[in-house]
Image 1 (cartoon, rainbow, N blue to C red):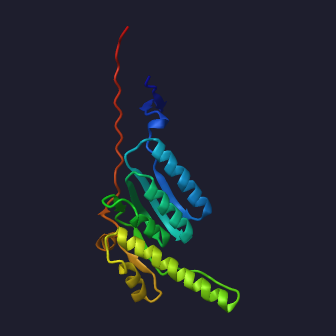
Image 2 (cartoon, rainbow, N blue to C red; image 1 turned 45 degrees about the vertical axis):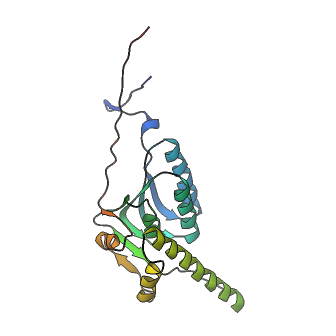
Image 3 (cartoon, rainbow, N blue to C red; image 1 turned 90 degrees about the vertical axis):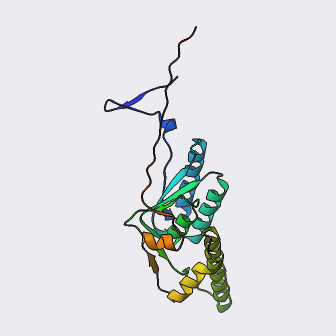
Length: 200
């Protein structure tokens, strides 16, 4: 039986029918755990598309990789929506949304840059750390290029040409580079049909 919920006299939908919208700000252990739980909840609701709003300065590449794994294994279209900023890991996560469903708000900014890390210890350890970070950067940006239907070295070349400087894209520039598809904030429209029948 349909059950009404009222707020200030307005009829609203039951909580279990309200679509789950995920927000990503932090790329760290806590952020990725929250993301995983939110994705499971959205999937369990049975919604056709899972919207992810990104407004982030970035963070850990390892957290980013786990989030990408979750998106790729969820089995549903994922809409990524940049609001405000998608920097570093944020821009890569935005690019990894389902093609055709990657949005950027008109006044948002997107940033790419070379992978950054600190190292200390013996010279041998530091050389190994640098090699690992370089391999990690190559893997991430090659994966991003493939998903964006660009040459595999497309984003690595942009980063090399920037020579250590941050690369800022406007939403239109992000579309040009195939990081996003649409400059807009999408609307989420939910319809609910209620039928009343009588019988004996």
